[in-house]
Length: 524
Image 1 (tube, one colour):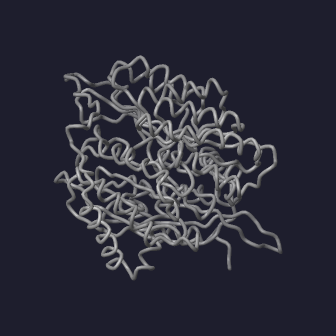
Image 2 (cartoon, helix red, strand yellow):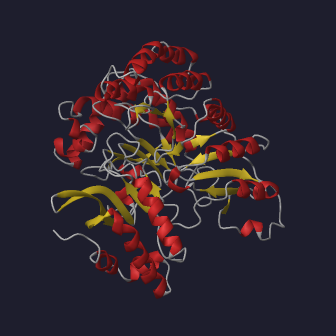
Image 3 (cartoon, helix red, strand yellow):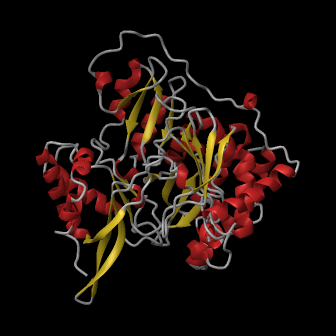
């Protein structure tokens, strides 16, 4: 951001500090404080005694400078709980009022913006985590995602939208950022252009996006972002907060075709306005390692399952998935210290709470693997979970506790690593754990039994995020929370007995998952 913009954001901090002190002193309601604090990227935790702060990490790119700031912040403020989110940000938890305000101020000094991390504002721009280094990608979308993220910050103090706006960029059909069902998504094409999708989203009443433009030159993307903002400002629902997301405009405007016409109307206005939003590719600067000449790369270390070979010859990525998206703060700081001594190395955060350490040479991989040990060892252990109801104000169920119980049960039952898939767990219908898009998903729910509400989860199955094959998971029924680990053990043993991995078993036996679930689902 420009220094003038940063100064403008800092001018509001004294008022926020005053209001935060009042809230944590018990002089303001949670609802009133939430309406204010969301703009600063902070929310009170469920207890109301401490809060969290969300650091925007544009495109999920943790450069060494950003890493150093986060590690220094953890150490100076003695932060003991951090969380990698499904929007590629970092949340710092269990903070007092003074600490929250101090970190916001300090972050702005190193060009990390927390503003707009919550509330009805453009959120962190998402990007395929291995863009620029991934074999088989259509093209590197990261530079464009970063420009888009910077541009969206200019709307923080513009007329307020009805609700938040999420923007994503994908570098291939893998569609890890769900570009085809975001509020606005830029899906890369093999010809170096973008197809653009709009008015999609997960949560209550999920919808896939509408393709509003094809074969768009990347240099023109800011025009499409401005048009999206104007479309939402004009036709977004300001009256009913439950329908104040972009996906509800599809129905409100008469269907996908009518929505596309409305969007194109605003796009034409932007194009005719005379405002120059074209991006000059020559102004984009991103350090891309050229790779090394090394034709003798063999050995046991480089065959490790957490090592990914990059498209740059001789360079590698290490995959690190802290269970539940909760990295140990000490381990995070140790890793940062190590990476600070290396060239061109950085971390990319992924939408499934994985961290990828990229641009590593053969000489340093062993040390990085060692420091990042102790995380997920199988796709199942790399399951996605929101922060959970023990912390989140609106959460129904503690998704983190469920995930821990499931992993423990599966380990004790000695289920093979390929017999269960990555799950997606959300504590409530908001879908922060993206439960609707996983092959197996759970969403916090409840069930009345003998006059008492018992904790449970709705089971989803069959979700797929791959572009061209997108599908939302099918609801199979509600399981009591205490029964879910046993369900997964039975499922894992069934798959293991078949001799297939989970995905091939599921394709071969498309109805058997439902059959097994019926043994555990509550009857109506």
